[in-house]
Length: 268
Image (tube, rainbow, N blue to C red):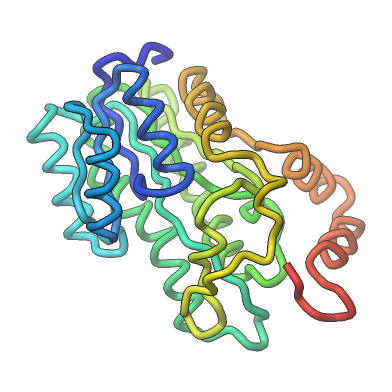
């Protein structure tokens, strides 16, 4: 699988950030890449920018099961199967539990969890036939609940558990299931993150310039897919967070609080 030439790679949410970087790098490696997104203009811009004969794009909202199924069928009709499925489409949020609307929580769960379930269920017969790889782009928030991101953390915990169950069911089948946790990566996800009223916050409170680039993150993910790693946790902060939460959970609570709060107010 380390040789991706002529492999059919499906990437959801490929018009921005990590997804876009994955699309670009897989094309460079000789793969046939299909990607989807909700924004038709961004998809058209991506197709024009890359101008590659092995790129297929389709406007899809991953929360719509019928659209997910139609997307996978279109890929199979075009290229005959699916070797690698990367569930990358996702959205974040930023609001306290005491203030957040149920609508925000439902939207985050629908995109991050159910979007992955729908697409994976549609692609599963084809990935099984190819002895391929199913990937979920998760988060450190899937290991450690993050303040201000309760719905996001819940969706990533659910994603990790669902993929782990699927991997166990497929043990010995030749098909590999894995998840990757980028940690804080420079991308559009925080700008598009929902506020308490389910509207895009529009401005990131984080220092994007100090984060790992989407391009570097994509390189690590592709390497992990080639090696069929069980899971991947990126960045020093991410690895430290997972370690601390596993072995020193009370201390991790304190550190997380002081990272995200200042004078009792959520600042990140």
